[in-house]
Every structure is written in C-alpha cells, then in structure tokens.
Image (cartoon, rainbow, N blue to C red; front, side, top):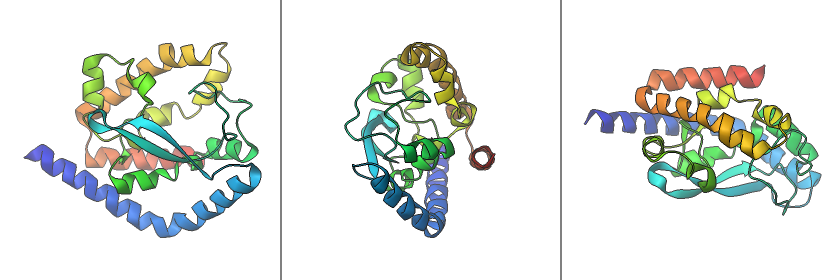
Length: 202
C-alpha cells in the first residue's frame, strides 16, 4: 500500500507542478517553436521512440534541434553537422526538453526519474538492471542528467562517440538510475529539480 501511495503522491506532484508551470512556459515554447521553424525547414517538434515504464514504448517530444531527415547515429557529439543554429543554443540550455511536459501530462514520463533510452541502448542493459530501471516512470531530469550535462562535449573528444557512450557513459548512468530506484522520495525529487535549475542557470 505504501508504494501505491508514494506513486500516487509522485504523480500528483508531477501534475501539480506541470500545470502550474504551463502558463509561464507556453509563451516561451511558442516562441521557440516559431524560431525552430524559421531557422530550418521541418517541424518544430521532434518525436522518437523511447522505452518507458514496464518496457512500454512511447514517443518522446523535444524541440527539433537537427536538420529534418538528417539520419546518422543516435548519440550526438558537440559540433555534429546535423545540428541547426537554433538547435545548438537549445541543446546548450536544455530548452529543447521543454515539450516533455506533454509527456508528463500524458503519464509517459515524470518530472524526475531515469532518462528514457532508445530501445537499441536499453536492450544493452543487464536484465535485472533493466527490470529495475523500467519499474518507474522515466523522467525529464535526474542526477545522471545533471552529471552529464556536458555529455555532448565529452563525446566530441572521442573518435567513436557511440562506443564511448555505450562503454563509458552508460555504465555510470546505470548506477545513478539504480540508486534512484532504490532510494527516491518526494524530498529527493524536489532537490533534484532545484539542482537541475541551478545547473541550467549557470
């Protein structure tokens, strides 16, 4: 019963904070969407399959930061030629993640939780780790997202960004995700949200 109550309280916090933030962020989101459309041809939003709670696939929302029909690897290093002018700024400030508030309202994501992976990379996690990580809703932010805020710069220094991501970054993220699943709390989520805001504003 306690876990059910905790999940309900977490969901209530997600909905309450998201609905409270929407009047403030909707004008900003509208301006960003217009900028993305004017900066390069293609839609304002980018959608991509990700693995959600229980292994269910959903389509995550982001502002498009790459040229439409760009193709290429699923990890992105700083300086990637596919990134648009607007996209460089959006990725640096993390404002490309704002449309994920839609995913929070839909129940596919939480404000705080392990970042959702694409199916290809989630399949590389050990079975037990994958089961535990997917026992909670994925989040817009978490400790791993704060720690790897400059992930694209780290990948840019690698001759093989995808191998670097899989062999060096994913194992560290896995530890953060498992720690979160084992010990998350409402107070902890609030701390992560404040730490994320501080990191973004630096």
